Image (tube, rainbow, N blue to C red):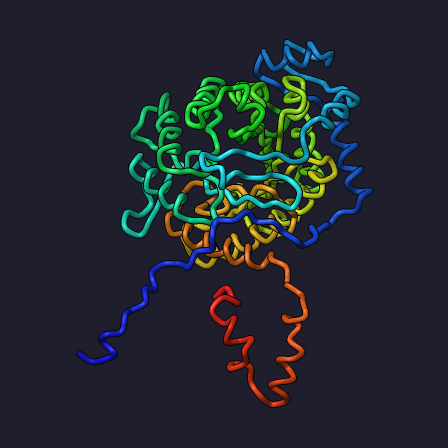
Length: 442
């Protein structure tokens, strides 16, 4: 056998992983609207809450608002907000909080310059090269969770990566929670559709973390994504989940789904006003239930394709909304959530460039939670195994890009430049030889 054949072959079928680490950006956040314009959106939002109001379908939620002194019309289910009350309540949530994981080394900080990457959650389908696009099953879900656990750059599981159609819809969330605790030591999002599912999630976290509800309230572990029914409506199930999360001092991530031209005004400024009004309404609800309950300001504002009415993602409108929403979140002092999105039907160039645009917008807007950071495909209809891996590679590149340049006497390299002189090369310098294996990402 030749010497060449004896050489150990290097595997090329896997990405080189960075170690587990929290991502903290040193970059300044992008700003595309002025402070005066932020104030204009803020006051317009309060005007909408006072004069348009919000339709709240859940009687208990309306009762909470009514007991607090707000104008509630039971026949129309409308709640009209007093701006002074809103202004007092939005001061109460913490600016930063930590979510516990089963592995304490993987606890997550939300707020400030911290960035958390969460896997996709919520699609109806999954896809891979072998099985193609299909309705998900529990085995697929378990395999997806194992991948999430194996990828260090993904900090959080996204709460039901995709639906498991063969399991009864009334109880499949329990199988999800059990799988989360069995297969991951990372923090996992909840499946907050109604009071029962949210309570069960909180109870199971107490069991898994071996703590009481009082202890969980002091060190939260549960996060629920709460979506309003835009425009200006809150349904029963989301109301129930919001109340349960706030009552237990767990995290309510309030995220209106506002698409310009469909569920929100076609002008982006109007979309931001409506999104902001809906968020402030729900922040008020959480603080009426439990002052100081942690919340996140969630943005999922984009536009529709006016030729088809379908959502459009990774667009200039999405990017602008993401950056402006980050400014609004910082204006109130709320931790901020955005998402990695694309509208492509397959893992192709469109999927990558739309995701790349979305990711840089989220990171440069200082999103503390990048939801659907890995695996999202087909406008959220599909969770892709391949896209999960490709996104993980992109997230690693972004994570490395956010690290500051280390400036010191040695790194300035004056002596190295002197030793090489004009017309030379740096391959054999002491500095290169001591650093070549670890200096670059690739």
